[in-house]
Amino acid sequence: MREAIALYTILWPILRRAMVHPLRTAVIDDLRTWRYIDLVGGAMHLAEKIETRSGATRIGVMLPTSGAFAMATLAAWILGRVVVPINYLLGDEERQYIIDNAELDLVITAGPMLEFLGKRPENVTLLQLDKLRFEGVPPLRLPAIAGADDVAVILYTSGTSGKPKGVMLTHRNFRSNIEDCAKRIELTSADCFLGVLPQFHSFGLTGLTLLPLAVGSRVVYTARFVPKKMIELIRKHKPDIFMAIPSMYGALMSVKDAGPDDMRSIKLAVSGGEPLPRDIADRFRERFDLPIREGYGLTETSPVVSLNTLTHHRDGSVGKLLARNSVKILDERGRDLPVNAEGEVAIAGPNIMAGYFKLPNLTAQVIRDDGYFLTGDWGKMDDEGFLYITGRKKEMLIIAGENVFPREIEEVLNRHPSVRESAVVGRMDPMRGEVPVAFVELEEDAGFDEPALRQFCREHLAGFKVPREIRHIDKLPRNAMGKVLRRALREHL
Image 1 (tube, one colour):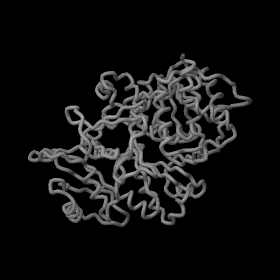
Image 2 (image 1 turned 180 degrees about the horizontal axis):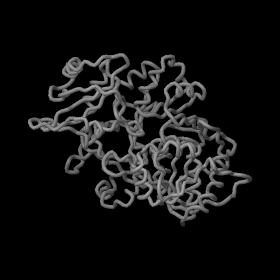
Image 3 (image 1 turned 30 degrees about the horizontal axis):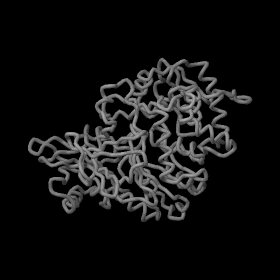
């Protein structure tokens, strides 16, 4: 039985592509071009090196966005191990916590990574790819038998509150998600992807690694986001699919000589990771004659839940659900709400995580008995099946008894010509419960005029939603995926 369901692992479609089209280009990164045979052959070699150095169930991978990350992941799966991607941008303490919590005895990395880090991780063997030599024909071996519901990856969340949580994602989670994504956006092996998203994040792992490799597409990586370099890569490789977070789309508009002709090849520009500000979407479309299609997902959902496409889209929404997903909108007592009513978004489907690693009580709090995962996001579903996300439940402000989401205020501030981007947090107030405080990044050469910004907000918002205070900040604090760290902003209150 396990031999039969082993074909439903995420490894199988990638191996099948390598067998059918071994010489097809799979990955182009900052250092080299990888054919499918290079990825799988290298993974076979690497699997032998891992096996002689580690007996642990889980293998850490700490590498920049590259073909090497994909090769290391395949090597661990060939051995039937669980992959634990490690965010190399974390501080030493958080990184060590992940290594200890996951009980790793080996981390696959490379010399340049170690130079980038501060303190070297403790109690773990570092297997440096740049010091290995893969010579001769790879040692062919049948992949270890794995079941569809076996854990394939443990992705640790960024730890915006408390310790990072390990999200256990199974082979079925990934297979279902990539199959539904490929069908929704009608992917073919002729498509070319371009991205810079880190592969230790679910968006980069599923959307820019597993999805193109399983479909047989070509993917172009670069490890660091530099706007001018991204435009040069678009001009050179003419990608069909581009995936990025909103702030990256905003930064591309800073490249003065870039225009619509550069974007002609892109048939789908996907935004995810955080809400897409309406201002960025409108200005990007006007500048490049290319609409950005927003999607929605979480690490716990492998990650894609819904997606706007070329043929099915609504501005302001995050699209329609993938084929095997279903949604409930719940009130504060967990009861179903009707169409167009706002409440907490709950998702069910084969892409829902197996749970949080070593945290059964927390898992039980977020996965209901009926299998629906409580996302912590607030939203609604319209009568045509489009999902709208209005804010994070934990970020919701209660101002004089009224529920206010920061995003509504941020959308207004972002429309002001002097504001590049904004973030709003709540400050406790003895009279009103909470009051909104805004932090703004300014456009180049723009002056900071708080009274003018507050007046602009008064013209577009109800009085109780107008920020009590607006502060100028050079750069909003962000995590590795570019999400604004509101916790860090609250420390300035």
